[in-house]
Amino acid sequence: MKTIYLDNNATTKVAPEVLEAMLPYFTELYGNPSSMHSFGGQVAQKIRIAREQAAALIGASPEEIIFTSCGTESDNAAIRSALATQPEKKHIITSRVEHPAVRILCAQLAAQGCRITELPVDKEGRLDLQNLEKSMTPDTAIVSLMWGNNETGVLFPVEEASAMAHERGILFHTDAVQSTGKIPINLKNNTIDMLSVSGHKLHAPKGIGILYVRRGTKFSPFMIGGHQERERRGGTENTSGIVGLGKACELAAKNMEKENTYVRKLRDKLERGILGRIPQSRINGDTGNRLPNTTNISFEFVEGESILLLMNELGICASSGSACTSGSLQPSHVLRAMGVPFTMAHGSIRFSLSIYNTEAEIDFVAAQMPAIIERLRGMSPYWDAQAQAGKINK
Ligand code: PLP
Image (cartoon, rainbow, N blue to C red; front, side):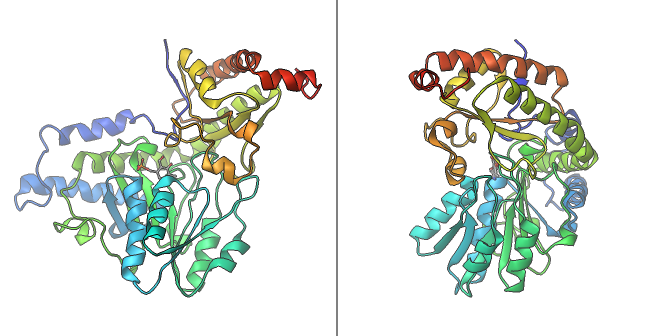
């Protein structure tokens, strides 16, 4: 059975060009980039190139790039650094819809005496910047707001938010794990101080990430040890991962237009195909301001997990909630924060596409979904009750 992979916000396929670039670092180019000999030095040279490639994708300078192990580490490092460099400040502003890499860290910091403000979102998943304005205090160490939401794709106005923080001398971090490579990012045009990237969301392998730290920003390392990454992240470099991520960044810049034309068109076609065929289904999130590859669709009166199981039987991969929250039957914290009704939030599926998807795959999925939903609704007493009450036009 062929796999149709529509779960690219969970992780992506390693691009063939990326794999090819990485392979020598497992075989002949195994030197340590910190070594004095030229055998290691040639690897250090390739890391320099990867740093330039990564910087170019987000409009940064190479020395502003710190290679980390993942998006989670980057988020943790940014927030912890803000607290460590400003020990007198104990307040963090974030949002209710952040990834657990930020939310769970903030919950732990709250238990250790920090004050956390989680900004609300409206029913479309949008942020009201007036709430940010009202929440900032002289005690605020950092504002951390995600750029693109992993579950709905909704984009936050992080550039405006960073300007507001900047005016008050407050550090601003954004989790750009989902948006990097999907929408243009140019850090020369804004006042974002720190930004997180994860390799495995943009066709590089798992286990490599980036924390961008703007030149002049005080930084306290999360991992200490050796002198790597100009003493901002100790630990022998993941050389193959870094080289792969550099290549993936170069490819992402080239494919940016395709993401916003080809992938967007496929996503929109999938949405039309599903919503047009399935009653009581709807899109969650602001359709006018989303990542081009993501859609989150609710099917009323069915369980997301049951939908996934039937999709899985056809080789179709997607997620209910985020990959990190699936496995629990709690509706996702993102949909709850948006006030999505319980009967809708439970039956939500996230489809996330990539440049490797084809129109034939999208046609197949759109054609299969009605039968899946009908089968499950046929087993649902709630659905029957609604139909009998004349509330549903079956
Ligand atoms: N932030 C967001 C928005 C994400 O979607 C994810 C992963 O799903 C992460 C952070 C964590 O990234 P990583 O898996 O590289 O730790």
